[in-house]
Image (cartoon, rainbow over all chains, first blue to last red; front, side):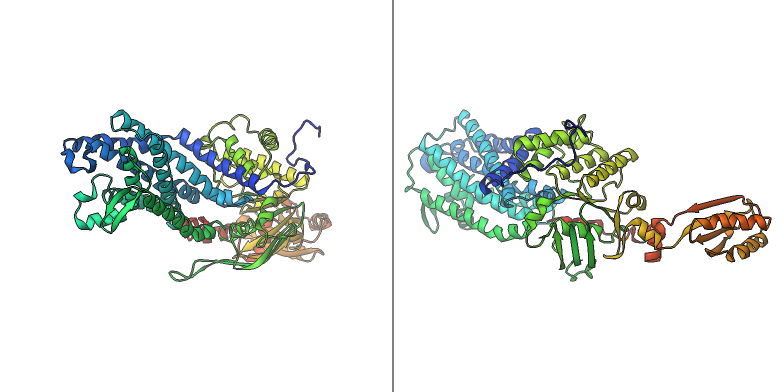
Length: 288
Length: 341
């Protein structure tokens, strides 16, 4: 055999030291994340639908209550401006709720087995890749909605406001992604997962302050909305859009007491870490 | 190179239906550098054994070592040594073949230059250049299998494990894969493949194990296993259609010959005679004796015992009968659930 002919079994390269754990984890995580983005690029319908649906909400729902008396809403703002924060949060939420779908398909089609046969340095790379992918996707979708809302004249949070919006969305996306990934490993198939996503989506939206303020709601619904994690994301964002905000300002007058923006963010952070801790034993079991 | 010791595995908790015993006390030893075949009907436990070997599944009891590493204690070390080509080819339809191989290379932590060089070599060796940059969703079964083989070989494993590598493939693709497997063996890679095709194992394997009901019932080289069955099979006709009387006369004559065993009259084939001979010289002797008795030889065929004979001897039924017995009794949904994590 000449040296030019490749061999099925190439000679071992001597002195090839094992690379560091961090380098290996980044290599596998980047490769897995890239795969998800290539899928998105070649099959962009999820991305488009994820922007289109909230956009329709924004335009149609906004128009439906466009003539609502301004004094009914807190701060006397227009309904469109009020709705904006709700729709942005809804976009991030429903985007993140889909995080489990690619994982579920990989389980069902056996692609996950291909990953598990490989000597991954850490199998958390599989979860990490999903989190990175869905976080960027949800943020891009939310920014698209924010841009459109701005064009519709519903305003734009400047400077620190934008920072607060992004941090809030990030925390919410982490929490919902953890939930969705947990479901993707716990449920038997994609039909069940889609059913759960379908059922969870709208009630969580309605039982939050996305479409109407707490003061509009009957007591029982007000309680539900004041406990709904979406509300803890919507109110700080609404405050950021309103312009004059500080982390210490009260953003939600819940039946159980007043909550500041900082408290809302803290609750979201605790929720996100709690959910990751909760699903961890299951991921360890399924991935080991 | 590979040692599977006393492996047992059951599926199901037994709450809804009795648990399915997939493996019971399966012991297997694959020498380094050999091409080893696992032969058995569908449902015999071949896939379960390979999935345990590849660290995808934990056995209920037993030990697995690959290249001296304990697969249960050091699964990552074992994964580095193994290339696994699964039965159900799991490819991402959206990616191109090249992208899939790049992903695979990154999962095995190959440096980029080495990864791309190796991908280039495998594309050439497996004849994939024409279609490797098309999306996997457009590939035929043979293309997918070749791509999967390339993925299994990418990190240059010491052991290549293939689960039914040629099921459903056209003859050309099958021949191509056989050639690659032989080449790998010749270059020192240990190859373990499962198959329910007798001719595949017969043509390829240096060593084989017959698996039935989750346990090994015979193991050795194909030649040794066949030799253990005794001599060659001979079919003899003194004319195209003999009478029973003539056949009996010949039978009586042949039974007296040294080195001839079991002379059976095959009524359904025009009263031909089937016999087992102990060595090749017996044929000449037979011809002489028949000539002396003034009996012509219309046809005489001699064949070595086949693996089918080995299988029959070991299990009491042919492999095809075993396949037919399990056909329809398998629960595809339950098996899919077993394969899911």
